[in-house]
Image (tube, rainbow, N blue to C red; front, side):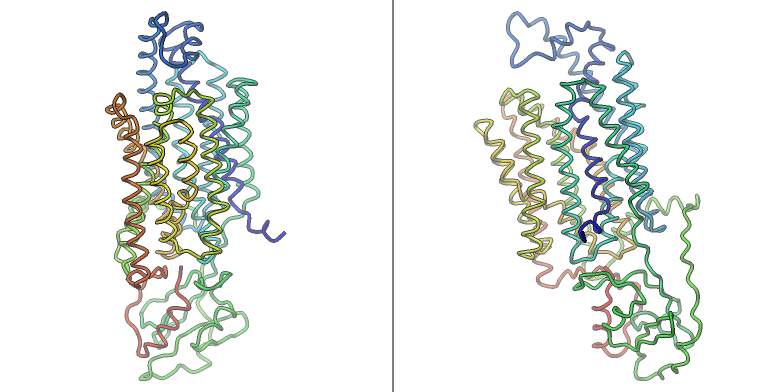
Length: 569
């Protein structure tokens, strides 16, 4: 079937997320067990009794309160160190690997690095579950550190979304990113349900063995079955004594065009393609396999003779070096930031910075809520693990429904632009968080999650919009910048939401969701400004960096036509 040919990184995303969520709750149980039995040296009966407590302590259980406080304090410290270890290295790795993958035009090595880190993390969990007497500090070295060295989710998402952006045209990119994110989100309910079932059937060893299998299959698929992104064909334009570069600009350097997308096309057009070259009016000469496109010169200069174009063209070196010069490491690290902050035409730099702020706010909201919502439900509605898991599975199912049902309606049927889709998604998430914050009973948590069916489209619209603001060879830098935000945001979000929740625990535990409402309102305003700016042509998301074009030739119509038809995305 034709759709199977379009399947690329999506299976790896599903397997990775399913393997991660398999261990989401069970990992927390593991280190709490180790803290209770190994660090605090309580016997099994006390630790099991602590796990079985449901609701407030009865008078005959008051003796357990000091023990619970000790375990809570140790667990909080462990989570802090775990967050520092897991999120410190990815901040640098996503920057370095983003620029490296752009310069070498390779995405698979980044995917493999992240997946191998997750595989070794699962193996570390399995070993720590087997040797239950090991100190919980060992978890930091055998579980958190390998995950961090692999780049965690930051590197994986940067590489996966760059891969999809490279292998899709602008018209279908939002849809392709949505399908990929749906596959990734589908792994959450599968992993949560399977993890709870396996833990009940076989305990820690059964769950962590399954996680090893999921991650091993994802490594095998990515390493042996996933092709590298299509490599661009490089066409070198001969300048010679006439001094003409691509797009008819006058330059002294020999430019090369990497890949050409037509914004209104359904397929990619490679440089040198007869179909692509026939779309424009400039003179097109063909000599066997040598295709050369040169814009006609201004009227005041003579057109080069036809035999000029039949001369042998300089050969392109398509061999990509996989090595990195150590002296250029600094440039690699700052390359992503330069790609974001450098001057761009049509206010696209402001657009990129705005999208970075949007992803930062989404990240703060997500990581803050993920770490606090279990405590919130336990405090306000006296929920336990089973009730919380059911709600989490329902939330994940809503995310999948939003990506598989709402996204096609927005992008294919209604043909909404990315800023408009993002604004609608922000309003939906604001209403959802307001419903949860004001919930008088636990059933309103399900209502709030259902309202958020459009909310998942917000981050997706931001990523898609960012990929359309830059050249193809800068997409890795942009996704590295977004991945850096994803890696560093837990260091901001977790302490922020924890402080708010602790200070409002007794009076208004729902305050954290009111904070999320404020963040959603800011996101809505930013998307609205981008939508209005795009409609008024203040921002034009052609994806072409015209700063490299020195000056226009005479003949505005010729330049505009050529520029529009061959603007890089």
